[in-house]
Image (cartoon, rainbow, N blue to C red; front, side, top):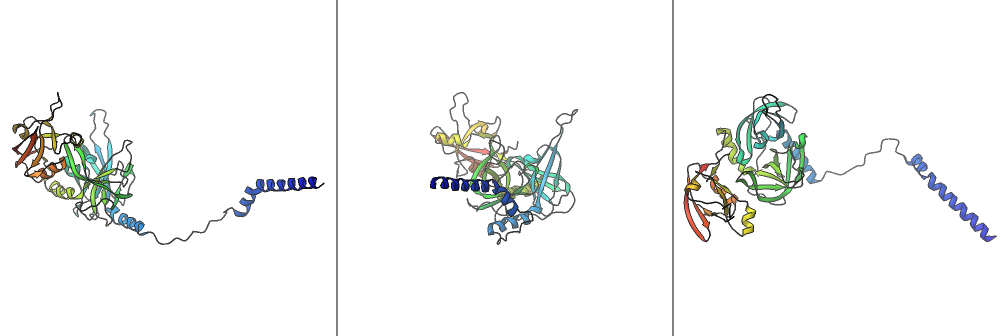
Length: 361
């Protein structure tokens, strides 16, 4: 009798529990469903880092523009012109705008859209392909305020960075990160690199090109120009041209329209090759026929044997360890100047005086 009673009680408990399990969703929906607007939870003040980003965007975004460039038709009879877009920012009170050269290269018509939605025609004032910088000018309309400039000479790895631009055609986009590395080099043409490029992990995507990279004070420290990504989308490695470089060449583009590129008439090998061979200097890959470098007897790599020819190790008494050293020294010279170049061939060092020429592509 005791056993039968225990079994009946157990079965009753199980039935009750099963009933509760089955009824639980309905009970919860009846008693706890939010069938009226929920109250808003109170939050504290925004974090200082959030306020910094908000203030930087509020102050800088009105001076960042969306650049549209339409190229000439590739086929006269069929048309087929293409439109590409990028970013830019107001440089001065005359309405000049800085962007990347590759954004407006070969463009027939260029226009910008301001932060308030206005679309205005602009004129290409000057281009510097070897620095991937171009200067535009608003033809008419309201002039947004120029952005304040910082310096790229005192940047430190780890400090905050802010990029504003128009990735994938999306207007006025802010991304944040840090300065990931300094003194990178960025190829812009065969045998030509930009020195001291800034690397950042602030997301930079197609369309960000030409937009400003800002520091935590809201000052422009670079011009966003490229990403390193096998997929073509941001992978946390973006590059910006140092603002000190832009600040040096933009006035010349505004006043003269172009910027001669000082060179010797050589193409150089990648730095990785020199590092692998344990060579400290710039390996000459090829010498341009008829150039001052050829007249001075400089020799490149023997393509049939792979033997190294000349390696530039010094210029004007300054040690040359990498291409950026060579570029800096040449940029301090005008076309027609003469530089004293020390080259190493085998175990012998010799000195040659070579004329500086314009090697703009």
